[in-house]
Amino acid sequence: MSAPSNPPGVRRGPRPRTGPRAFRVGAAGAEASVLVFARGPSQAKWLGRATEWLQGEDWIDLRATREPAADGFADGPAVLDGADARSQRIMRGLGWFEVDGDGTPCDRCGLYPWQALPESLLVEDGGLLLCAGCRAPGGGRGR
Ligand SMILES: [Zn+2]
Image (tube, rainbow, N blue to C red):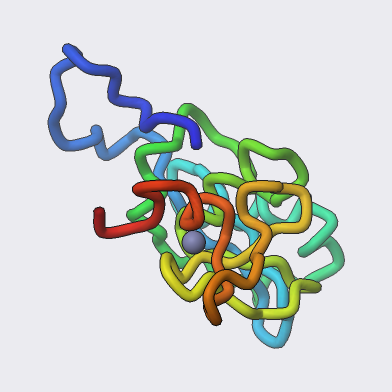
């Protein structure tokens, strides 16, 4: 997974209010949503509406909800729509899942498999369904 945007040795502090923040953008009644980095909910909706997942949705149906856990990945206005490995790893780490996945999370870390991420695929191990990360020695959450 990519590292948060605060490299070691750089002063850490509250993110400036004008910097990009993370939003989950979806539409009422739609099953898919996207993760968007934007300066505010309105920009988030504009960016989200440009994706294949939300194009054609009426503006008034769009909802932008803050997703503070993803703020550290913001390096500018952008959309994470799960189309590339970087965004898939970030979204999986935040507990997101694929719309067409089977909805079964790893029994140890609770994260969902993403078809294009080999480390996320579940294999039965001693009666549990575990992702590759959790089957590795010392893997999994809560070490
Ligand atoms: Zn796992």
